[in-house]
Length: 422
Ligand code: PMP
Ligand code: GLN
Image (cartoon, rainbow, N blue to C red; front, side, top):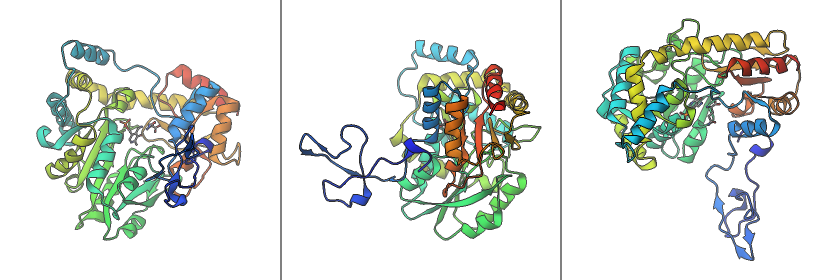
């Protein structure tokens, strides 16, 4: 689906078992020809024929190949608070090495519920309404798989985070795209209302938004509430950057909004909040009936999540509730530092209200498609970035790319020096 050369779907082959060649996709590697040592190979009609390897994997690999500074895939290059791995080691030594409870370690679910109540004034019952997941990606996939049926429509907003559409399509749903308008990347609610049909099962939205760094206002949430009022449309709110909102603004969680909350799955990720993207631990909040459906799927696609890490995060949330509150200031300094590095370059930074991503126009440098420009930037200038067109259904290319500034100042300064020479 997305992106450049090695992001293309695997090549098509003739079907050795008589299925339509059009729907056949060869596995890569020695079996790709479909025949091996004169034996017919099994072939598989892909459920996701247009999907290749994610742009994050593609660009991180290219960065590594060229020894480039990797500002593409979003992850910090600094350590989590030392206390967190210490607590993991403690819990491993203390015996938390077997399955955790299916819905998550109770102390962690209680800590999540307490945090959400403190920040958003909403009470979710740890026992029935909070589920710990193996990353936000799994929570999103599970919510979609639990609710979307073949033929259902799901409205998403493009540029759209790359995991949503494959999750919808693999369960037989159809993604319907609402546009986030360049350059403010906010929705046009009249357009969204026009996209709603009797088949609309769900609306998936992401604020603060990756890749644009925009935040939906209270007015946007009201418009969303107007759009779904009187329907059975479910909502999936991807709020993984809830703590990374700048300039004194507050994140407007779907959990805070009584009308939205009653039909929402609200997802956040500890990867973003505690600088541990590699731990893949997140959670999903939802009213009891929705959580029950969510758990029906969750118990059979992961069952339970890493036990000692859940216990460690529960400890840390209890000991240092202020850590998450400090995240906005921490990343705002990085945003400002990175933007200063871009002064004097020919990149044009767009406003960045949240997240750890900075969008930049490069129209003053080149007219190349963004997918080619990021490759050349990586190869020739030693800085890797993400092309924004890959997040749109039609590849709409505004000559805008995304840099991740969740990096130490030395890394950002070195990247800035290179970018000023482009
Ligand atoms: N949603 C968005 C908008 C993201 O940016 C990311 C990861 N960066 C995720 C979901 C996935 O989070 P996780 O790593 O916890 O699966
Ligand atoms: N969400 C991260 C980003 O936007 C990447 C996560 C991944 O690689 N799957 O860069």
